[in-house]
Image (tube, rainbow, N blue to C red; front, side, top):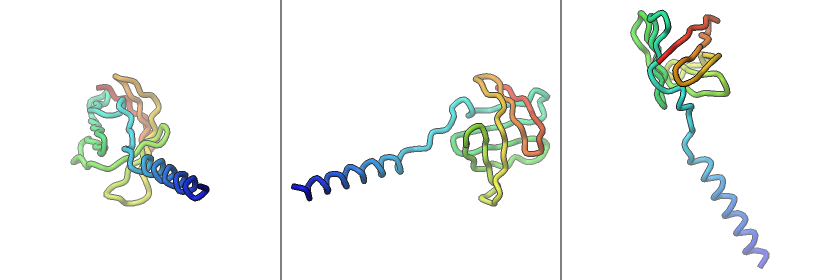
Amino acid sequence: MKTYILILIHIASAFVLLNFACSKQQTNSKLQGTWKSKDGGTVLKITGKQFTLQDNSAPVPEDYFVKGDTILTSFEGNQPYTKFVIQHLDDKNMKLMFPDSVAIEFSR
């Protein structure tokens, strides 16, 4: 009887671990979309998987993830991560601090 209980506990633990490991990573739905800077010089496109910053140069899509209030990107997997800090975010407006400490306001 003790063996059955231990087997049941191990199976339940494995199920819980697999459930968390296989679940999708949730991203912030307010963050996704096309954002345009207030001065019109920069367009930012954020999808579920890519972060694309378009200014005067050619756009380069980068993979990203969000940790707290920070967007971390890397160019083609290179280290270190580029950090963009979200200072303000709502449905229509976003204020983003770039890695060079310049804050730019975006709207949809």
